Length: 360
Image (cartoon, rainbow, N blue to C red; front, side):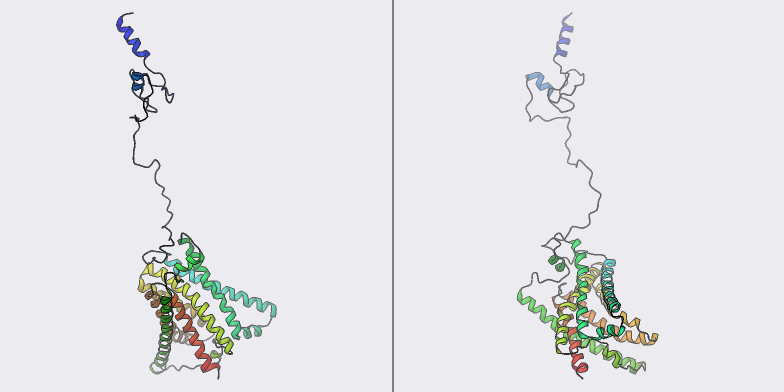
């Protein structure tokens, strides 16, 4: 064996067959410098007869700033509202136009179904329609069924929770505008006074509009407006002082509060973000007025009579609805003034009806 063959054999004897770190089989390449699997510095081990220090990096490993896995294409929707930003949602898109209209209509339908179920039970156990009629005409029974309007709070409060990080009842109502959060005592008193003032203004506006409509119909179109005593008896008129007081309390604490949460706090809030301030306000006022006048279309009267009754009632309702909608916009979507205005306005109509009609 010559010197050249001996040198070649000695060189191969120094080569590693397996990586001393990870145990992977190394390629049969002369003077391989790094393990192709873990990157161990084979050349360093061969030269220094010891393992390389850890700071020597693997030259075969390519570092990258890209994520190891592709981003998820699942859309989880917009970020939910935190407790700190719950009062600052004017620039935030919330529920859709369809939901803004459909949920209040669903709440109204649920209320009608509850009342229909109650009346059905009464008829089932009494077998007498006269008893049902007497109950409906009774002031205290009317006050009792007014409690069913809590449905107008339940529906939007449940739905609003899906937009909140912390969907407590307090946060749900805060998102809908029913809150004193951020209001000092003086500011709350100010909102109450504004609500009282607008209740009086709204009542004057409604009375003026009603008189104007009657004048136009009688003088302009020659249509005589006759007030039927039977229709007066069917309206909400307290039977005594106690029922009058209860009516006022219910109108302010329940009816005004629940309807404002549903129509302004939910419907107008959603429509404004999808349609703009003007059309959101107008559409809310229109739907609010129509819902309160559905009973007119159930009258067994001629189409002309139904139409005239609708016009006489719709325009005043629409006027007070516009006032409530503008007040909600002016007060930065807080419902304190609105609830006072709505409730006191309803109470004023009942008090004056009791004074001028019920007491005589």
